[in-house]
Image 1 (cartoon, helix red, strand yellow):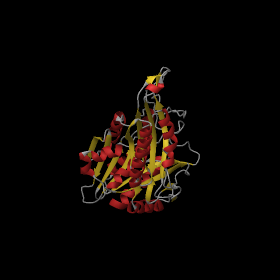
Image 2 (cartoon, rainbow, N blue to C red; image 1 turned 180 degrees about the vertical axis):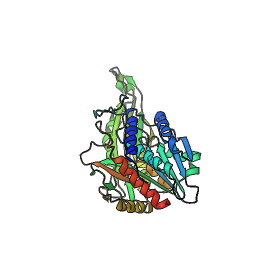
Image 3 (cartoon, rainbow, N blue to C red; image 1 turned 135 degrees about the horizontal axis):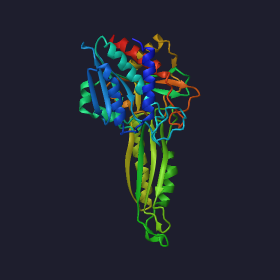
Length: 382
């Protein structure tokens, strides 16, 4: 089962259509509809929509007993203005597919075409087009949907294109491949005052000046260490943009990052204790909340073994490279109940980096990615 030249041409054109009409996390309604329409001719046995927001699952069922294998891609784009200059550039100002999720979606659509022509010999294949990967709530939302229980996979596979790696080469390893992370917002509340009489209020100015260097100092360990922790201050604000009011409110935003989920709990506790101590010394109330929560993404050895066999059989160069990486990826949620693995497919050593405004997914990765996943399905299901 291979893609025809016509398949590749049509999949490339469709990927570029998606690229022109990007939708950011939690807004992917039209993108999801495009997926459903494109797969209609492949006649999936089941199509679930609205999973975890705008997620789509297309199921190709052999009718015979066997494992369920899920392949996952992402639907969402980024709030970045594109400057790539390609003819199919985003038509939506300030939004663009600067991470290649349009290409990952085309790879799964390629699988749909092939399973539409011939179902697996046993078991089921689920193509999961997941929303809201960039904000970390997409995979969790999909898994929390009661309908996901009916398609819960035994194996889950995904890929991400990776600039900086030679084109078509794969980076793959067992164990942690993406860090856990979460955004922490620390809110300090004092009392405003007239700027001519600041002593009558309670300003958060000194507290915020202490927090900004103290938060990164909570990090410890080298990245190769399981105890690794990292805190990056990403945003701060204080008071109103006026000259007549001494501030009474401030916020510090930071991203916390660890290799292990249990280490994340410790780092959050340390950051909260730090904020409470500083706030207390300056007579401030303090509140903390969390956003964009990503669990660690951990590749199961069994799933990695299947992928390594495929890469060898398909003569795709592969190695561990610089894995794991500090960046986060919400695919890890699927690994809590399935043997899961994500591989990283080289987009070229000099290709613009992910999230750069001049990035565009290399279309020639579509047949490579689909070939890897098709062989994986055939090896497990026949």
